[in-house]
Image (cartoon, rainbow, N blue to C red; front, side, top):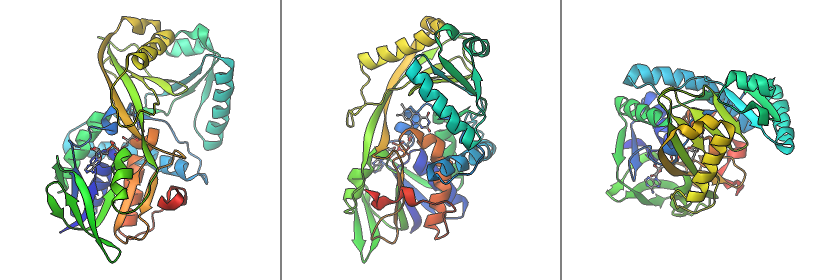
Length: 367
Ligand SMILES: Cc1cc2nc3c(=O)[nH]c(=O)nc-3n(C[C@H](O)[C@H](O)[C@H](O)COP(=O)(O)OP(=O)(O)OC[C@H]3O[C@@H](n4cnc5c(N)ncnc54)[C@H](O)[C@@H]3O)c2cc1C
């Protein structure tokens, strides 16, 4: 008998399993594919700084906790597993190339200041000095955020899976959870493609598939897939240093010369195809900002499914009417960033402790 079964081995499920097992729990992760191959693999790994100032905004507090935990988890995983997840504060530049976008960016800068995020305004020349590959002449506004960080998420997932294994977590890959047996307000059995399993507690961390899974427990959850397409460019040497953000699109340079170009936000159901139009749009964005990127080779294109919700907030908590069943899903564009904090607060809840943060805005019955 396990203390907990975690359904879904993405970044949220693996982080939660790692945290629970670190506290001595016997944990099993049930993943229908290979762990960490869905959105958690497909993401860009941008970790925007939440800022130093405490606030009453629950999402912001979750992000602040993650900012504290990332350096600690990264060092700990590196020490335990020998895998470097590539966490580093490379800084981020935020750009606007028209007046409406510039006005929006100045509003974001006001918010950064209130939250204690270091943000330095740049003119076109200063932006191009910091990032010589950028076309500074086209800019209407720019800010430099020195504390922005990035993560090599595929490496982080490998480190988490290895860290879980070292802590005794059993990861069952290629097994799908298909239903539950409930008796007197408790999940008694988890029904899988490999038979029934028992555990004291269960948590669904199934990303955009959570709605279908929890329907089997008569719980309605508004999580839906939002497709994001990505292009990976490669170059023999680095041509950018920091993350470059413009609206919802970005360039993420890796130290090995690769540059990720993302992303789209599309309502395409569970269709993970890449499309000519979206990829052409991303390439035009990249080359328009930094013409030298036009010389790079296209290494790979892919799409992932973000777990979207109506209010862009995740669902974190106990399922209504069930003593021992929980959910942590719906992190939309921020699941990589929020994963360590999500793991810590969910583990506290599952142990019966206070989560330490106000989780009211994330409650399951909010619709
Ligand atoms: C293009 C793109 C760019 C992104 N960029 C960033 C970024 O820069 N920064 C950031 O913080 N976030 C980013 N994100 C968002 C982030 O990737 C997600 O929020 C996060 O990965 C969600 O993690 P998850 O574990 O909830 O879901 P997933 O990674 O989707 O994992 C869910 C797992 O559950 C499994 N599963 C589903 N149903 C079952 C079942 N019935 N039985 C067993 N297993 C099941 C699935 O196979 C899957 O492995 C990005 C996402 C995309 C797509």
